[in-house]
Amino acid sequence: MEEEMMNIIKVWSSTLASLIYCYFIAAKIPQGPPRLLFLLPIFYIFSILPFTFSLIHLRGISAFFLTWLANFKLLLFSFNLGPLTPPQDLLHFIATASLPIKSKDDPVPDPSSGTHNEPVAPISMGLRGLILGLVIYCYKYKAHMHEKLVLGLYCIHMYLALEVVLAMARAAARAMVGVALEPQFDEPYLSSSLQDFWGRRWNLMVTRILRPTVYNPIRRVCTGIVGGRWAQVVGLWATFAVSGLMHEVMFYYLTCERPTWEVTWFFVLHGFCTGVEVWVKKSLTGRCRLPRVVSGVLTLGFVAVTGFWLFFPQIVRSGTDVKVIQEYSALVGFLKATKIRVFNLRSFVFFGRV
Image 1 (cartoon, one colour):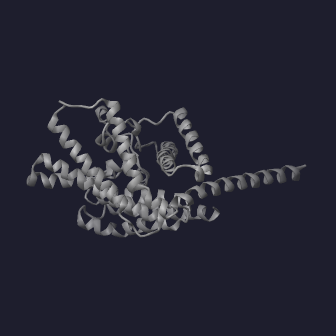
Image 2 (cartoon, rainbow, N blue to C red):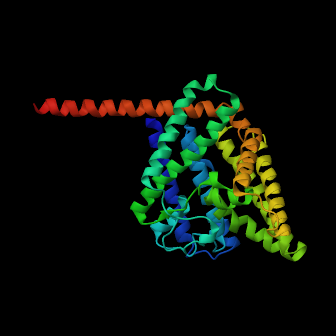
Image 3 (tube, rainbow, N blue to C red):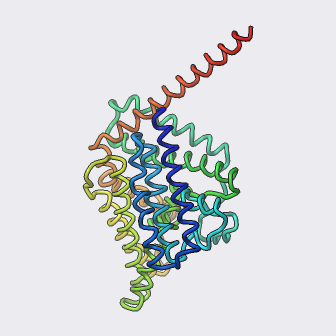
């Protein structure tokens, strides 16, 4: 654990130096291919930095923030697009590039979108932290549980862990530079359709970064070829395909094993079904609509069943799930040892004075 603390310093020192370079290069290099060329070394650096960590948690978080989000933001920045344009002060540029944040100066989102930027209430977040702790505790009895029940716990674990971690990051970002983190989730368990689940409630940071980098360009190109209606569907399918490939990359950082492409097929399947759902809803124009309770159960059931089938098997086969649980035990042991050392130090100082 002590070694990983040093690795955190190394990774974020390299990140800061890289982003300072990106910030000042904008004033020297024109937008477009020339700027993109000068940013290619940063793309490479952000792709290898996560391998500095041996802990899966740190490797996965840094890969998500740097290899995926930061690289996609810098790709947009190369063409004067995205959240990094126009460049604000250096501190805001670094925070926006390295963290999933939305500045308070950004336009207020449309209320009809179903999302919001308000932080989760402390009591609600505390409850989620408590449930997460109970889920982790239940892993002690994993050997006596049905396989599907364990996978269900993994789903809850993944959702709550991201909620808790990003809530902590949101508070830190607001205290440091006065910005609010983009919401990662918006109560996905209330989803009424696949479009609602993926577009408005689940992993909203990814949705916001994939829209300008994949969906909008594909839709714009296809509009003149297949028409606006089909261009929307093609853009949607392309977005899910890219999301699947990037999740495959994230799984590689977690497992350090050759990809099996199961998670890619998971997103391809959901992209196809979401596209069909959008097309059907536009064709019916509200003439036939399921009750929200029924559509919600069907949506979450479909996500869970396909997740058990395609999303989690690679994690389980590689033993990554077991390693993640072991890391929690190691963290608890480290915190206890640190507490003991602090107590002994205080006792030494106290009795030394006496």
